[in-house]
Amino acid sequence: MPMRGRYLGCVRADAARNLERVLSTGARMLADDPTVTIAAIAAAAGVDRRTVYRRFASREELLAAVYKARYDAVEEAVEAARLREAPVAVALHRYVEGIVGVNRKWPVETSRMLREETLRERRRRLIDEVDAFLARATDEGLLRSDLPPGWVATVLPPLMEHAADGLPELSAAQAADVVVDTLLRGAGATP
Image: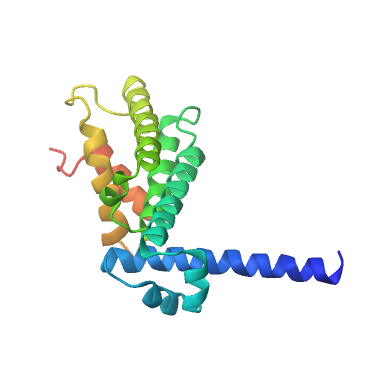
C-alpha cells in the first residue's frame, strides 16, 4: 500500500475511534445530565470541540447518533444471542449478557428515543424478536407457562438495567448469571 493510502487508513481509523469515543462519552454524560453541552462531551472524550461540531451541527444530531449507536449495539447483542436457533438457556444468557454490556456502554434514557419514527420501528422489531424468543422459552419449558401474558417481558428489562448499573463489580457475564438466576428461580427461598 502506498504511503498516502496507509496514512489515510490511519486517519480514517483515528476518526472512527474519535467518533466512537465521542458517542460513548456522550451517552454516559447525557445519562447523568441531559443538558450537557457538546463542548463538555468533546472535552471529556479528549477531542477538540470543533471536531465534534464538524460532525454534528447540533446537540440533537449528536443525541440522535448516540441513540442510533445504542440501537446498533442492541441489534448486535440480539443477533449474537441467536435467539431463534441456540438452545434457549444459552440464548437467554447470551442475550442478557449482551444487553447488560449495551446498558453499561450506552446508558442513555431510552424513552427519549421513541420520538423518532425509525427508532420506534427498530425497537418494535427487537421487542417482537425477544417476545418470540420468550414464547419459545416457555414452549420448551425453560419459563413457566402459568404466568400472566407478557410478565417475563415486563420484568426482564429492569433486571438487566439494574444489573448493569447496580453490579459494576461484576463482568457482564457474571451480571447475566445473577439476572438469569433471579429470573428462573425468583427471589424466594425454597421450602
